[in-house]
Structures are given as C-alpha cells and as structure tokens.
Image (cartoon, rainbow over all chains, first blue to last red; front, side, top):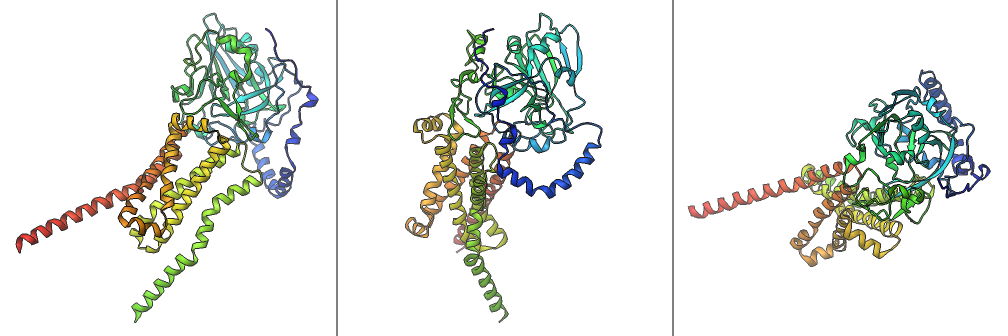
Length: 320
Length: 225
C-alpha cells in the first residue's frame, strides 16, 4: 500500500493537553475549590461501588506515531469532550458529558460473530491488547457541517478482523452499540431506532485508515466520546464512527445503518465526505472547523484521497 | 364613595404597570441578548459559539412571537387590560431577535456571499420558509406605531398585522425542518402556537355565531313590526 503522508510531527511537537487549559479556566478552577471538597466526598462514595466508571484519564503507555496522522492543530480537549452527538444520552450536544458521567465501561465484552470460523465473546481489555496502540490524529467531519481534529488512540480494525477469521462469504461488517435504558436516557425516546447499528463494506473495514479506537489525547476514551470502544472512519461523516461497541458481526448483505432507517433520503450507507453531494436540506460544500471563525471548504473523502480507489466506478451521488 | 376609591386604586395600579414597569420589562427583554453577549465575552459559549448564537436568537424570536400572541387571550381571560400596552414591545423584540438571527446567518454563516445565500433561499426549503417568516415581520415592525394605525385605519391595520400568524407558523416549520431527528423542541413550540391560534379560531366562531343570532333577531323584530 502506498503511504502518501509522511510522519509530519514528532511527539514533542504535540501541544500538551494542559496548555489548552487557559488561564481563565485555571482561575475558575480555583473558585471551584470549595465545590471540589464536596465533589470529593461524592467521588469517594461512587468509587465504593463495584463497577468502575473512572476509566478516562487512564494514560496509555507505548503510544506509537502513525504516518496517517495529520499535521493540523488538535481541537481543544474541552471542546471534544463537551460537544458530542451521542443521542443515546441526549440529542443536545452539550448534555452527554454530564449524562454519561457514571456510564459503566467495565466490565465490558464485545461479541464477534456472524460469518466467522468461531464466535467469540471477548473482554474489551483483551481487544485493546491485540495490537500496539497508535496515535492517529484524524480530521473528523460531522454531517451537520462542523469538524474537529482529534488525536485518537487505537489500531487498524483489520488487526481485529484478522484475528476474527471471517469466512469467505463475509462481505460486510456490522457494528452494534450498547442498548441500556437505565444508563442511556436518550434511548427511552424513539428519536432513533435502538440499538445503534453501523456497517462497512469488507474492503472499507480492511483499509488501514479504519480505526478501532479506545483512546484519545493519550488516555482512554471519556464516556461521552464513545468509551470503551468505538470506530473512527475519517473519510466518512461522523455518524458512521459508531460508539460504545458491543457487537461486531460479519454478514453477507449490506447492514441497514440507524441513520439510514431514520431518514433514507438523507443518510446513506456509504456517507463518504463529499462536497459535491449535498445533504437534501443543507450544503456539504463547506464546514466550520471548531475554533475557527470563517468556514473552510470541505475536502473530498475529508482529505483522505487514499481511499478513492475503493470507490472507483461507483456513482457516489447515488451511493451517498 | 367606596367605588371611587376602588376605581382610583385600579387606575393607579394600571398606571404603575404601564409607565413604571415599562423600563423593567424592556430591560428584561434585552436579557437574552445580554446573557449571550456576556457568555461570548467570557468565552463560555462552548465548542461551536456561532451555532449557539444562531439557535439562541432563533428560540427568542419564537418565544417573543408566542408572548405577543398570548396578550389578547390573557387579556380577555384575566381582565388585565393594560397588557395591551406591552404587545407592541414584545412584537418588536421578536423582530429584533429576528434581525440578529438573520444577521448571524448572512454574516457568520454565509459571510455576505450573496450567491450562496440565494442558492440557500431557493434550494433549501427550511431557509426559504425561515426567510419568509422574517420578511413578513418587516412591514409589521414598520407599521407598529400609533401613527400608522391612524394612517391605515384600524381595520386595515388589524388585517395587515394578522400576518404575525403566518410568520409564527413559518418560524415553527423552519425549526421543524432543520432538526436532524429530534422534533421535540419544535413540537413544543407548535403545540403552544396551536393553542394561541386555536383561541383566535374559537373567538372568531363565537363572534360569527353571535352576529348571526343578532341578525336573525333583527329580522324577526322587523317581521313583527
């Protein structure tokens, strides 16, 4: 495979997360010292419960650089963790951060079944150790027209696929999110059909860019960002990057993804980032990079041209 | 004697509610803008400030339109007749937030790109209907003064200002058509709006019924004499 992007930055160049916390936030933190005392008491109480909720902020060791990383500036951590389309919790982008605070990410198992030689039910920590963790700084483009740059941590999905040993008749990979009415209040409304399902064609799933992700900014994923395990498919609109995965199934027919069920004329299966194919209700030609004032032009495949060969000969207007 | 005192007290309270309360209400109506401005200044608008500004100003247009539309029903049902003196202020604030909402769109979203704006208005129906709702408020704002009520005459002025019904409906549909999947917020506005418009429909039916009855009584009287 021809690697077009060379390693752009060394680990020393990546701005430490702490620098994104500006002075104003530091002052606000000082003011909250009194509140913190109360919070500590509550925290001790929560830690006493059997399941672990504080998985985020666990540093990931042995991070490797990736040639797939972009040199663009990371979006501030506080923005990526407080602006989340995670309808399982809320359709308000500012609410998942709070609502997912006590989401239990351990113990967590992922079922790997369908057209595989042997069905497996794996602990998520077993999956995380399958391959060396890489830091992939990807552009992430939401179908709504905003975008961010996130230093994800994970490894190519094809590492898991290799170990899953799919049968020849497996043409697609289907992913399913957790369904838990008690922990995920958004699922109590039928805003979408639950559980959330997404899918990839086999060659898309095998592409090295498709990331099986369990961390960001050098730590395990925060709950509101899809902990403990999610996909990141940077050349497609963000809703394809399914969160909180509990099942990976190999199938021979195209999976019906949740947003396609919700509005078939607006959200397709492929959903490749494409400035020439508008959403029926808004243009996809430009995007707002969070933190920037002016809008910027949207790039074909979100700038990841190396996937173009997967779609040669395909009418991307029909297969949106 | 006692009636005189009661009437005096009522007049005093009405004067209080209209004259002295007015600046308080005016400042309160500016509150949403002040809050937005303060948060913007403090950098506390979150990850996508322009989206927050657009949504917030949009919400307040609808809220002020609904408040304006609720003046008449509330007056009739509670007898607080002096509320009419505030209807114009609330209506104009709806227009004010509509101008801000529109400015946010043409500046912070489109950067005054006329070509792109025209493409939006003509192709994306939620923008078409939003733009319609905004445009309909312009003649209402311009003719909001008592001078204009005089110039147009009460009946013509009232007929023109019924456009607020169309504008409010357009605004709710604009909101409904722009959400991805969660229509619960636009549905809430739609519900309140339908109550306020429903009141008008019922009032109109009652009035028409009364007029019919009065007309038939008149005919019967004429027949008798």
